[in-house]
Length: 505
Image (tube, rainbow, N blue to C red; front, side, top):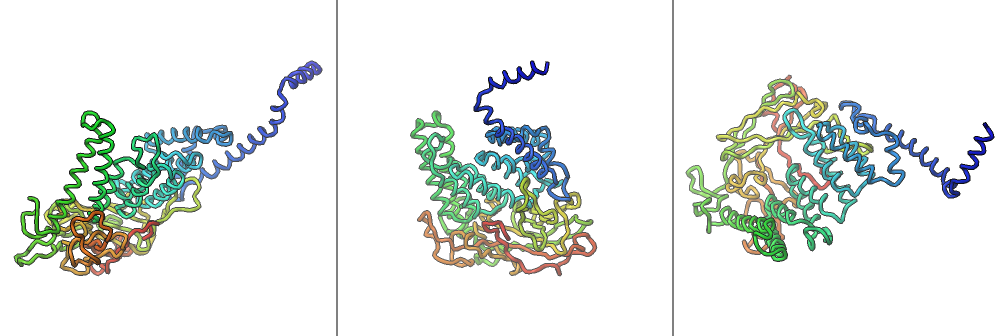
């Protein structure tokens, strides 16, 4: 029997091609290395992001994925492995198990750095999906989100998508319009790619629209006007190419109508706010909208918003904000609560997730103004993972920025806050960062350089800083815990803390 088996084996061996026999050691080595790497990867993924977060979500991320799956990248199927992991991400999105997603995003971008959707969705997930019990975003994830987008841009420089997402996150979430401008301009500067719907341009038409809106937010109206005109030229090109009528190209037709509306609106708002005439029915006076007479003085002057802010600690980590803001209903005052020494942070040693410092505390929110007053309670006691309160001192800022307010409120205060003042001079703050300067529309108000001539666009001389009103408190941990009251004695001089390209304060 033994001889028969041996003979059988010999006969079988002769039928195996010589090349395959030669590769056997290589295949064996790959399998061994793969199993070792699988163990290493699982070891790296296993630890929790930090001691304060739920343990085991990295292992949940890999649940159902056996060691053989991890061999796919070694055998040349990196994109296939990334695709299967992305399907796994969808399952976690649907179930709301957000903690398990970030490790997968990190692994997928390693496997397939050219899948732009992973960068975009991962960044959006970090910026919007981690929230507290009152649906406020965990602002600690903003910096990791931006870092992921920058990585995506670096790995996909020939596509505009990740660049656009960087701009949109800065525009919508961070309210850093200088960075938003940078992202949208990068997207538009992308080399045109044949076969795309927007060829011969580097980015879709919507990118030009949101860049124009970004210029508006920065108070750079000549630049906004020039951008709307550029968008009109592009939509006209596609309308002509695709038939030239609403029926044949409804999408570009509607985009063009929006462009015409916004272009005209920019011009009329400039005239209403900064010129004596011509005006629309929005401004029925003979004065610039930012300089109406008030208080019976009969002399045009900026409006005194009379910002006051009071903070009461209802119970530990539960703060009630009340105050006055002399403005039309619909304005909103912003609230920032953070460690006194807070700086955006990402764990550079984290290879699987985007770990943030669990000992940091930051909250950002806003409060509506009704009948010149505001009143709101902010509860941070239910979310110790987001609001750690492990530092000795905290910064609390109550502020108003005209660049982020509603247009009808901005009609009185101007794009740059030229029509804004406060009876308490220390409440008025001017952002000295030149990169954030808007166009100078009127003399005075802290601007430098020539006034825009009202016609030339673009006008590349930015000399008007952003005016805000704000009240800053420095409070102790004991006060945040309700052991001592927060009073006006805690008010300290304001300090503008603009966010730079590295998101550092």
